[in-house]
Image 1 (cartoon, rainbow, N blue to C red):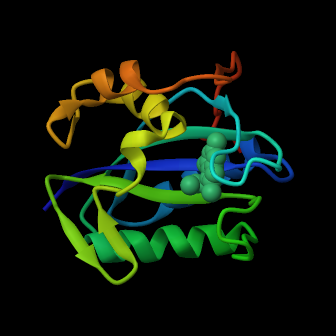
Image 2: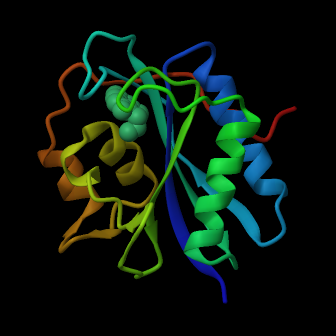
Length: 167
Ligand code: GSY
């Protein structure tokens, strides 16, 4: 069965724009996964550990026949393929790929929580997500409303696109 899933992408080391584009290309090559919509890129101040470079963030809509766990494994494999090393928990990273929503599923398992438990208070997730799915329900309110009410200080929508389909 096809499900609609939303992922958040981000990074703040090296060339995060290129890493996010490569990640989407890799995901799109997998049988049972199709990238349907991709947001603009946002430059966002670091959240949590603040003494690190700004991040670039984006969101994408996927259609998939994978299970949530299979999609999670695929996201982790894709991070590894892009040489992500999981070092410091809130520290700098080449690429981060998080499942934000997966159909109407609510899952709390070891290593897999959907909807993403921390997205509602993070403008760097909500802004790109609301751009591609304004009416998406996020715990009883739309992504659009959640993004409108989020603290957007320091966030800038970039004029350049995430040209993920280009080689
Ligand atoms: O949770 C994803 C990694 N991350 C980010 C991020 O993607 N963007 C911003 N602005 N801050 C972040 N802090 C962490 S950890």
